[in-house]
Length: 424
Image (cartoon, rainbow, N blue to C red; front, side, top):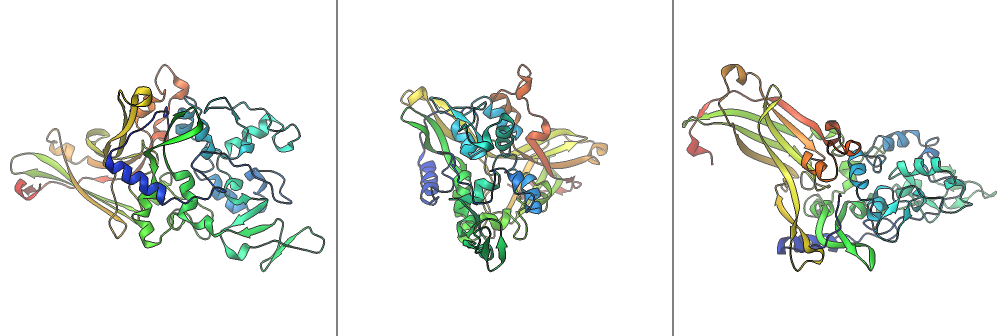
């Protein structure tokens, strides 16, 4: 998300991908619109604030599930903050802290000021700086998804509609009994289109006539990828990334959930010509889109190591660069310089074999310590440097634990002699 304000031009393949993304994303305006606008919500009766803390008393388990999720950390996440401090664009916060009540002040251009005054002098929920900061730091909270038009939305029909009131007009009633607030059944909460409003969008660029203007190159292409894989089988995002019985959200920041889907085998082989390679076989089960996907800096990195020293590695993901062009407004355009992300087969499984050539032949003692690591990289060091993470700007620096997680590791099996002509 860092430093993206430039117009973009497309190759034919990219145009097809973007066209598919736009055509397949009938996202309703009353939900999320890919960061174009914030959400101005009317509170339901008997609900006193927009904060998730006020949902906690009645929904403690759902609150804890949300609180452990990346939705709760959408605004305070160190990677987001390192980019946002460099360029506090309105389109960023319209997804990462989407409520207008989260108190950002928009400048004359496409940027926001965090130290906003209360939106209204008589707004008791936003009349103190601490309250604004708390609500802002909740990122994508309960209200962002579950409040519209003065009612609580539920994706489960047994919890709605709760529009009939008791005779005294204080408690909503449904077939499940009394409820403290009006609730309606909203089936769109369970659809991929609901997720697409924040997880499918193109690179923005400056346009004097618009606060947010997107180009044609996908910056996040998750929905378009899903529509070509899991979507063809009728499997929603929620079917994989949420639990039916809880409100837990799973994703690449859930190491155990991700590790359970991955199998990695590595074997060192010596060719008849004396070369030493590591044959790698990576299998990922139950994946409905490319891997990795989402933020453009995400990569999967396979490393062969001896005692934590990396001998050789290969990474998979996208690289998107600026290129100077005389005809482009601003003199630049974005283009995909590389896309090695892995795509699932029709069984929603990634099955990928490849070889890594060792730069030197390990000794017999070193072979006993030869191992592999599979890292999921949220942000690489070069990208972190580009958004201001360097020794001269320590406040913007990211720690290793912010940038990647280990999702698989193990020993490299010992060698056997093979005929190099049998392996391309």
